[in-house]
Each structure stands twice: as C-alpha cells, then as structure tokens.
Length: 263
Image 1 (cartoon, rainbow, N blue to C red):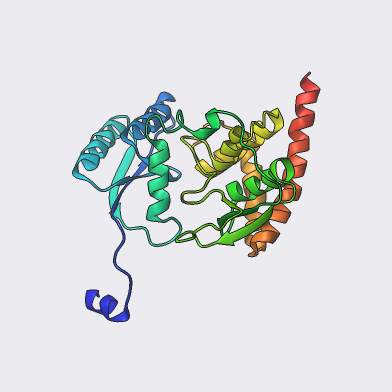
Image 2: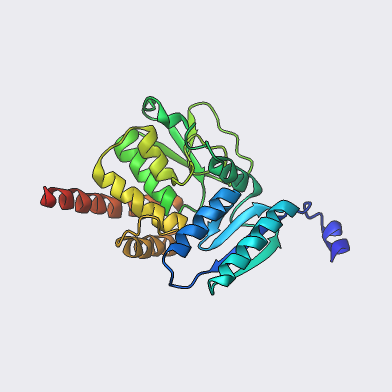
C-alpha cells in the first residue's frame, strides 16, 4: 500500500490527532458538564458530538486515559483513537480552534473593545458547501452588517484573501469561532448587535453547529431539520444561503414577537 501511494503521487500524510469518543449515562446530570469542562481544560476541541480532538502527544494521551477511567467509573464509556484527517476538516482549522480555546483567547479577542466598523459592499469569503453556521452568518451579514455584501465560496485550505475581502467561519478568518462562540455569535459581539432575537438565533445556531447543547434551545431540532433539508435539496452555496435566509427571516420574527408578547 505504501509503495502504491508513493507511485501514484499521493501527498504526504497529515498530522496525527488523538480522538476522544465518549458516551455518558443519562444520570448523574453533572457528569456531562464535568466532562465538557475537563476536556476544555485539557485543550481538546469538539469535532463532532461527543468527539474531541487533541494533537497526538504522550502527555495528551495520558490525560485522556485518566478521563476515560473517570467516565467508566460513572458507568459511561470512552474510546481513544489516533487518526489523520483527510476530508471535512483540515489540520489548519483544528489549529485555529485549539488556539481560540486556549485560556485567555476569548478574553483577548478584539470584539471586547469597540464595535467593528466596515465599508459596505465588501466581499465576504467562506468555505464552500455551507451549512448552518455559514448560512446563518451570511444572513446576519447581509441583513444587519453589510446589506451590499457579496459572498465568495472557496476551498477550506490554501485560500489567500484579496484586498476588500473579509473571511468568516474558516481558517485564520477575521470572523470565526472564538472560545465557545460559533461564528454567528462572534459576529454579534464584534458588531455590537444586542438584539435579543438575534441572540436567541445565535444560541440555536450554536446548539446545532457545536453539538454541545449548551443553551438547550427547544427550537434547535426543528431548525436543524430545515437546514438539513436545504442542504440536501441544493448543492449550490448561493441557493443554500438564499433559501436559508427566508427561513431565518421568519425565525427572527418569531423570536422578536415572542419577546414582545412577554413584555
């Protein structure tokens, strides 16, 4: 197999990562929070629901082994695997996630200062094959940040931005995940958008995208199904954004009127 790969001109192997794949019992309730906090302290980042990644080192392996023992003592289960990512997420994206998850990353983020200011009509660049966070972020950008925004979709790796372009939800982007915030939530903070309806949408997007049930929004399952339908029905990224925007317009009105009915 090795000789065949070399003869075919395949690229060199990527970096090795430790994957921590765990399943927790429904009780005790605190175990989910405890495990998530422990993984965060270890510097692990979520790749999928209940799947966390760390660079493959002896120290990281030992830390994860101890955590596995603790979970199994509570009648849960955990598997530690070493893997190389081929598609779906890049080493560079994982590096960016790790950097933003380090202690102090969120505290030092630029949106902690004055709100960002931009010239209208910029080109906003993101990864192709958009899904929930990129669809929602594009809607937020065009409706509340840059009504004249143009969108450009590129491969996840190797893109170098041009003058007049801003990137979102991709490696080294100006606007992406920061700490525990998804890209939509980062945009809210960076542009000082304090609308409670937008914040509610951000929580829904976070629960779907990060898969950690942090906000436990009851609307998340329905919105996830609708976004999934858009993605399955339309391969074109611009169409996905347009179809998603109509849904998000209605969701925004739902949350806005819900707030009014309580006041």
